[in-house]
Every structure is written in structure tokens, then in C-alpha cells.
Image 1: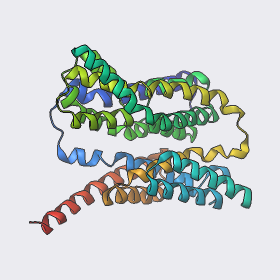
Image 2: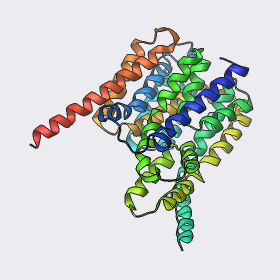
Image 3: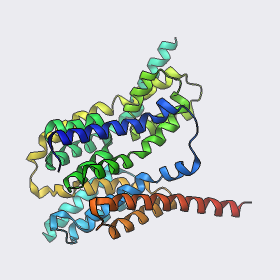
Image 4: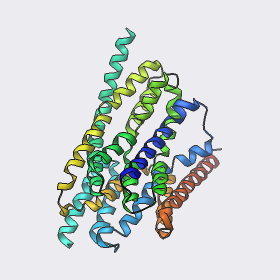
Length: 108
Length: 240
């Protein structure tokens, strides 16, 4: 983990970069249309990156030293299922957390 | 007269943004807690929420940094999560592009999933709103959302240290991300993008500098785009 000035530089760079992404069309480019192939790829950034980020955290959780852990795996699947069926993020978080607590209490 | 409608549209925006308080409060609370657990101090946690003001990117950055990923990889990954903001920016431009620069800059800073979605739907439904009316509505939507983002990050950071280990906070972040994935899986192309990204992420986990995430993200994006094209062509073939 970086610290101190380096961390502040990181936070500032992420802030500036994020603002640039938000401002680029609205502020600078105007309403010139984007090429369709680019838009088609941009549509899938979040739905690709977030599952890619979370998959290793579920399969090799840090808390169990990287070994597959039943309570965490089951909680992950329940969270995903509730989110998919209800389309409600908060309900999915609550359901996943309760499943995890129940699993940890039962299986240790 | 015109000032009156601008004012009432501001309040309509506030009412339309209000339900999202239920999303923003727990999410920002969790960022405060997770950031503190990862070793950030109070001002650093608040720095993220005020300067970046984008939950998924903040969680991504904190996760990768606490994994020991190089800062550049963490930065590129978090910005990649935020690429959708460029899409939002492009699609709001026809409606807000004629507003004064300072208003567009402020609107850009407050551009989050909720303010974009709610405003875009309203602009499509009310094509006759003037630019000042659209701006008033936009900042109305932002009013109940963004200040609470800061406030509950602060509360989360203040209570973070006092939460006992039994609550398994190590898994709070995966659960939050997993909960966000379900509602994103709107079409077969989105599902394919997510599956491809997960597969590549697990296969490429051994790559140095956490580069596996970026490779997997690209693979997922390309898969989603290709499946979308394929389905579109097939549909066109069935209905000539």
C-alpha cells in the first residue's frame, strides 16, 4: 500500500482523470457523435471489469489464506443471484451479508 | 415566470433523486469502512470521496492498492471502471451542451450513475425544457445524492475501526461488487462479457502487476461488443 504524498498524488490523479472522463464530451467536444464501434466497446467496460476484479477475490479469498472457502463462496453466489433476480443492489448486499454470517456461524 | 418554472423543476429533481438516498448511504458508509480497514486515514478516505466521487472506481483503487499493485496499474484499472462516465458525458451533451462552461464543469463533477440516469430519462420525456430548466433539474437530482455521499463516507471512516472482526469485513467489498453485477446483466451480450472477463481474470491471475485485470477487462469488452453485433445481425436476418 502506498502512503503519504504518493497516496495523495494517486488520489489527485484519479480525481483529475475521472473528471476528464466526465467533462470530455460535455465540456470540450460538443455533440459530435462517437464512432459506433467505440460506443459498443464502452458499453461493456463496467460489466467486464467488475466481475474480473471480484472473481479472484471470491475463488482465493485473503481471509482463508487463498483457499476456497465455503461460507464465502456460497455468500458470493447468493449475492449474485439476488442481484440478478431482483435488480436491487441493496437487497443483494443484505442477502449476501446475512448468508455469509449464517455460513460462518454454522461452518466456522 | 421562467424563474418560477426553473425553481419548480429544481424541486422536481430533488424529489426524483431522493429514492437513491437508499443506495448512496450504505454504499458510501461501506467505502468509509473499507478504506479505513485498508489503512487509509480519515483525510485520505475523504479525499477519495470528494475528489473522485465514483464508488466503483474508489473501491477498485483501494482493493488494488492494498493488494500491493503498482500505483499505475491501480490508476488505469480504476479509470477504466469509470470509462462509462465518458458515455454519460456524450449522451448528455445534446441536452446540456449549450449551458455556460462553469455549469457544464459543475455538472461533470457531479456526474454519477444516478444523476445521469434520472436526468437523461427526464430530458427524453420532456424535450421542450429549456437549457436552464434542464440544468435546474440536474442539480435538483444531485442535491439529495452527493452531499450524503461525503457525509456517510465520513461516518463510515469514523466507525470503521470499531467494527468487530466477526463481521467478516474482508468480504464486504466482494459482496458489494457482486451485488452490482446482477443488475448489469441486462442482455446476453452483457452476460457473455462478464463470463469472458471472469474466465480470463482467473486464468491470467498469475500475470505480474495485477495486469490480469486489464487483460480480462479488455477480453470482456471485446466479447460483449462482438456478441452484440452477432445478435443484431441474426435479428436483422430473421426480419428482412
